[in-house]
Length: 461
Image 1 (tube, rainbow, N blue to C red):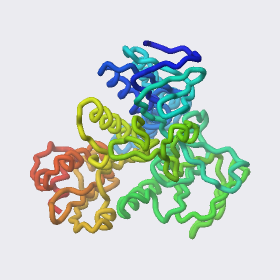
Image 2: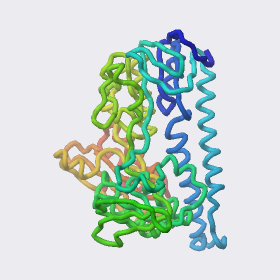
Image 3: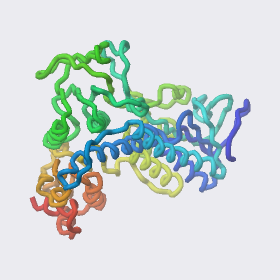
Image 4: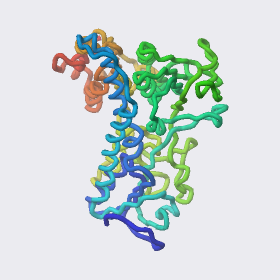
């Protein structure tokens, strides 16, 4: 079955997949290869957040911002390029083409699958095994929910009186903001903040907490702060009672901070304060599927919901808000269903990256988290300014940090904030999955000159 048309009768399938994000399409492919008939439903854009408003388009924009930044520094390398300007329309056209290629690829793959029917429209549970989409009713004993999430909108006073942007609407900007004010000092806000600073905007990041990227250790958070301030980004911490109103330039943001003006005059406002799951309009009550207080679908260690025969994968289950966690959800469910495996969510090690420049690669626990869990730890740190490869490239911002259990000698976690950090971190991550003592990595011979070669030196500390 290549496509499906609406009708009033019930159409039976072996499985129904709701959402074509990062877990749904590979699951549909795996199930059909196992001989099952599958219906997959997508109400908007194939590929989900990653392909359309997240990983792929934003990292394409980050790449443009990096080139602009490097071009401005070209003289440091003995290269003369003249004045550097950014054409945002061309940046956006490039980003759009890259995302479109991925989106079309996902849809074409699904429509080419044997035994797979693609439905476009909004899915809603009619019962635990019946789904309505348009005028069609679909039935299956196995239902997989992969509906993702969206930007959370805070209840700021005055927000109904001013225009604002989210990570999604930022994708449609056609002019470079004169002054971009960003509420939220974590991953989304900092990536966009540095990006648009390099595109030519004045940028102010407003964070209610006492430091940026609260989940990281103090030293990593401080290094991130220093990098951004060093590029001319204004950072307002401990911001309380944030409110907004129309202003002469576009938006006036009122903050109470220990330092700085109480009002920030901006041309554009970006809200980057977190995410919420797309679970409020699925009819989950009709199926009896439980959600927590934040709207995330409650799942067990194998991603099964409170209702037998229904699974939740990806961002909507609250187990991870990344493409790699969503794809790993697919792997867990498919392996357990089709291979007789006993894979669990709790077996995976947290890992993620912050794609500012330089990037932050993170694996496992922070030092603070390890100590909070009562672990006795050994900690090694090294400034990127002491890493030969970083020095050669002229990209010496950041640091490397690793945390080891003093008793078991296993690595508990690491952070690499520096050039190549998003790749280097996998040396540590793979060692952690192998449950090898840190000495195994310390004694490894790495290639010179690289950033990775300094991990053994880091462990000597």
